[in-house]
Each structure stands twice: as C-alpha cells, then as structure tokens.
Image 1 (tube, one colour):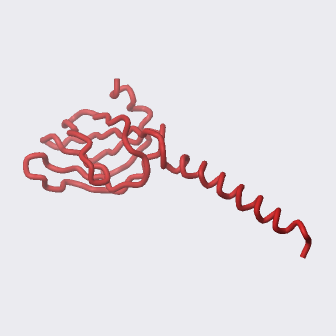
Image 2 (cartoon, one colour; image 1 turned 45 degrees about the vertical axis):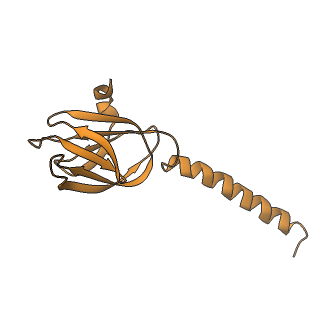
Image 3 (spheres, one colour; image 1 turned 60 degrees about the vertical axis):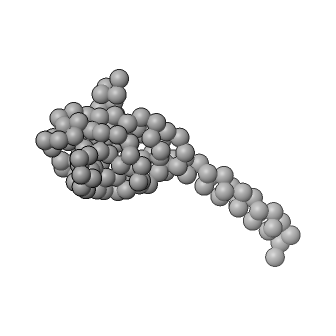
Length: 119
C-alpha cells in the first residue's frame, strides 16, 4: 500500500462526520419547528407530540404551534375530556420547514401556505 493511505482515510472520515452533522440539521434534528393542525371534528382536540402536550386545536381553524422540537415523532390527537385517542400518525418535523397535520384526512402537508394563521 502507498504511504498516504492513512491520511486519505482520515480525511475521508472527517469529511463524513462533518457532512453527517449537516445532514442531521437538514433531516430535522436541531433548530425550531412549526407544526400547524387543522380539523373539523365537533370538539377541540389535544395535540401531543412525542408524548408531550403541545396544546389544544380548535375545530374549524388552523392552530399554530411554533418553537416545536424537531425530529421524528409520534403525533396524536386526543379528546381533552377523557383522553381518548382520536388519531395518531408519524411525523418528521424539520427545522424552519412548517408542516400541517390535516387530522380529518390523516395527511401531513407542507405548511408554508398556512403560516398566516400563526400571526
């Protein structure tokens, strides 16, 4: 083997680690996220993200949760009166890329068009 193979291997490992850190940020680890929730159920629903209560989403409106943890989570809608699970899904929430959970249709959508509801 050539004498510079160790240097090349070390450089490749450092490059992989640095790009891995950037990939973590891109994939939603670190930074703040924005989750928007929409539903038309007759009652308000509690919104839980990764086992943490975010708040209550009212019926017929888009509710905004800013400063939310980012990453991959289980997202749940629960009846506030008796803690019954209404709907649950998986969510990847990246930083600075808002997501809208349409509970009625059980869809996660791009949320930029609904950011006006946050102001």
